[in-house]
Length: 453
Image (cartoon, rainbow, N blue to C red; front, side, top):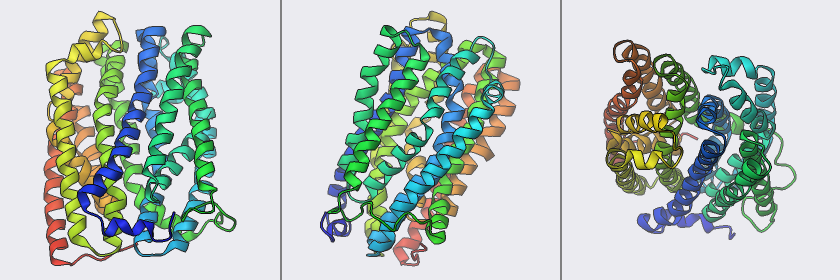
């Protein structure tokens, strides 16, 4: 990469840049969502409906793992983008080394703690004697590869931020293809059941991580692995963690929320209701991941121009991203309302599970047209280093709005109370995001904002 290559982020037309950076990210994130759906589909048809429930019980742990991964990866990638915009290439280089070291430390610590208390944790998450075995079998394999997962996701974020959206996309697509090939072999041919799906996941990520290191070891790259960058720097760690705190808290809250959802559904609907949520979550997540892809495309553009104090370009990329995200989530709404049963049948042929999941899908996605705006706004504050605002938006939606709904509404509406809690909170959070973003845009137009990292 040429030394001045990242400067195109401050010169090229915003629409062109957003397409250039978003399409690879969208493909990668959609592939990542399909990655999770493949496990659910093969497990549902190859192991059974209770195995889907067991898999759904692992969602809180997966969210918790993602929380620690985003604490490092998302924060560091944003920091790299801003430093490139400020022409501080030396610091950007050191951020890469710090990302690698922190991912190893966090990944090992998470694995050790979770292994020690796995049975107890899964029971707290709502596991019954019928579903505990499935959940445990899956998580034991996933935890064994936890360091690889953290490193793979973290380096993918770095690749996007340092001008390699295509390579980041290819790494994700590669894991999907490998997983899609290996999972049915391990499940149906080798008879490994749910462990086979987890094993395919870890092997795919190991192979992708090797390719990422191959790219980042190239000395011709502006940001590459070299000696002297692995010593942890207090300022880099603090800035990375502070920026990454928003997605960390969001994923941490998601972990607790999924626990509440699972417990509420188990109490009012049983194990199959938990499995139904697992299916609904996978479907909804497909559209969420497309929006996250748009956000990832926006991130280096917004971060660079914010660092370069070109606020008109920051506002322009924000508006375009919001428009595209709204189109995506509206599509999700139409699918969930018009053909819910058809979509659910991809995962299972069990009639009772299909009926529960189809109804849940219609309810959960009822306000989806405005969810895209809320997601982009929260991510926007994170992109430009306004960690406190990003954290506030993330935490209020999850903790201030959703948790009370999940506690109160099921006491009146039973299982429907659990399902309706989610769209109600989406609507409230979107209104709050609209108010906060309006205030910030006015500051941008007056030129009153200054870089803080």
